[in-house]
Amino acid sequence: MALLKIKRKRFWAQLAVFAAVLGPGIITGSVDNDAGGITTYSVAGALYGYKLVWTLIPSFIVLIIIQEMNARMGIVTGKGLADLIRENAGVKVTFFIFVGLLIADIGNTTTEFAGVAGSMEVFGINKYISVPLVAFGIWVLVVKGTYQSAEKIFLVFSVCLLTYIVSAIMGKPHWAEIGNSIVHPQLDMTSQSIALVIGLVGTTIAPWMQFYMQSSVIEKGLKMKNYKYVLIDILIGCIATVVVAFFIIIACASTLHENGIVINEAKDAAMALKPLAGALAGFVYAFGLFIASIFSATILPLATAFYVCEAFGFEAGIDKKWKEAPEFYYLYTSIIVISALIILIPNAPLIAISLWSQVLNGMLLPVVLVCMILLVNNKRIMGKHVNKPLNNIIGWSAVAVLVALSCILLLMPLFK
Image (tube, rainbow, N blue to C red):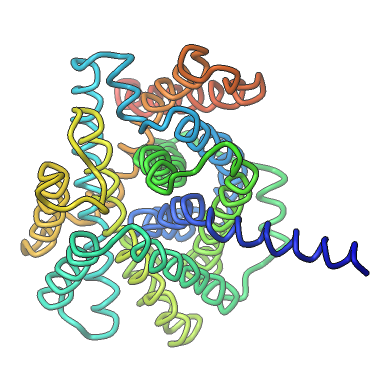
């Protein structure tokens, strides 16, 4: 009886530690399913049906490996990824890397506000009302809140993304076809399909995620004694990311693709689902898009402000006051304002911004991965916690595949 009591106490103690550690992995994984990601997954399902579902499996494996590298680097060094890149690659290299990432992230954040606008239009609310209100709300959450309060809200948002499972099931998917597409993967060698695959990888493993993950581990003050709980947190986050992505593709493949309906953005998918799978399915899809868009419109500029300030040696963190980290807050505010204003421009090319921001993510990802893998294998930085061979094989393979696909995409027009 005494032994049972000790085991119970140990279990509850471990659960309490996990609850305290919980956050960075789940939030980073869940925010990956943002408006740009939902648009990319929706277009993939509507255009190619179940054909590209298989891409989620290698993406899932690479995502776990990369997130684990980030967490380990953050815990061991106590420094953000941008900080480490600047210290080891120099200011000039850092500048060019981060200018590209900053442009991509402004495009990504613009896509989030496009998601806010589109989802609210499904419920009859004009973008000139929804976008300014949401932009102001998330600005207040970050500028006036604390990391702990923001993290609790982000975890609730993460759970809400599971509504996409409901939308997919309402579409009555053909599970045998889905299984066949996974067992027998296919890829059409066209510019459109290759760009979409790069976009799918780029949105599932976005460059900015790596910086946010490492920064959030540091912000939370995690140590190597928490490592096993951090791994569980990462695993849950990665599973949630891929499950949601899977069901978004399935929802659009089983309804839109089968009926030959072409969509250009996630809002189109929500509208088209209503007559095909029922009004509730359309509203559930739109609600998921709204939650994902708010979630990511908060995290994306936050992650960008974090890593840009880290890269150039400025103070950063939402637990700091404005006068303690003015560059961080000015940059965060500027990204939100610029992105929201772009959405409010009449006839802005939102579809192109959404899809190509994800393709740009996929093309920039190898640059970030190369920096990460070199850093995490540096014994001077990581000591005994350098990468194991399997991590390196998977990491370098991902770089090689993405570089090859990007080269094919860029060179294809020359051979037409």
